[in-house]
Length: 79
Image (tube, rainbow, N blue to C red; front, side):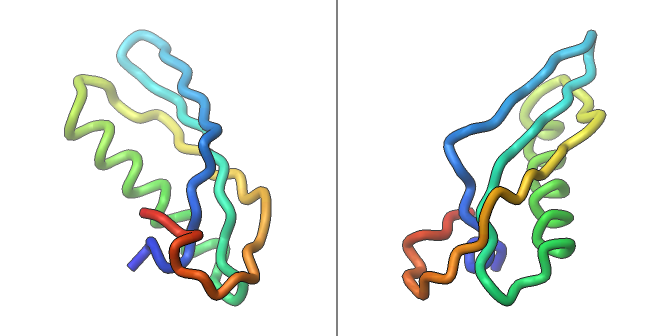
């Protein structure tokens, strides 16, 4: 699953504009994984979660890959 490839960092930003929301999230990606594919899955999961739990429409989810993790420790990665 996605949790095998990405570690979400504690830093993220949410900007509200009427009933629209813009989200910036910062992640580390596991070495060897497709950054493009992981970022797309993160975008889709965040958008789906926010829109199903709130009345807001997600206008954008910007995924900032700030690092690559070379560790084999699975606990470094969360969904």
